[in-house]
Image 1 (cartoon, one colour):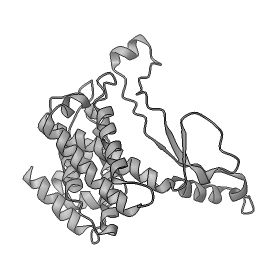
Image 2: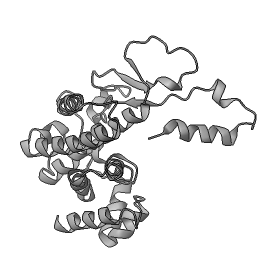
Image 3: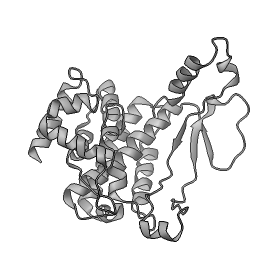
Length: 269
């Protein structure tokens, strides 16, 4: 969630006595969690129902300003003064790139199961990287004091390397499922697009990447689709604009150019 601390603060103030000293006693520390954890295969769960696979990434970016007491000296903590910039980096590069690979990769290889399979296709690799680079340009424009082009490009290349981790066995289904959240008005794609609009920068690759999500029908290990995704895709097929505005939360006026372009992509596919 973007601006999670603000959201939680409002909820606390609603439910605590009016004189409760939230600001002085409660540290609301936003984090940007980048560690990927796949859905566990049924065969592994049968051996051990508590088993969890995870990648060996152990950096926890968090809000330096959220602490009320000194920040504990724990290996892997990476305190940042502008946490909003780093939460956006996670959403608009990591999450956006992951979903882009899943949606575009599925469109070309609907029979594939794992993320590493689709990213072995140079076309999927290229399209994903270029969409991530476009988002990086937007982030650099919005947060010039936080990021450099070289740092963001290195981050993108490291992420794609991690997305291709064969041992992790991360599935296309896991990465792409839950379309009404991942395609919503403030999530990875539309959040980056809205930021691009504010910065007066291009977002054509990001919008095209998002459009592939409107045809995403990957299934899990048991051959099942994510239930809300079935309903969403069915709704899109019946009434495109109402589904995009009503279920994803896009503004029918302010986001109209985006909605029209999405519909063009949808019809073309």
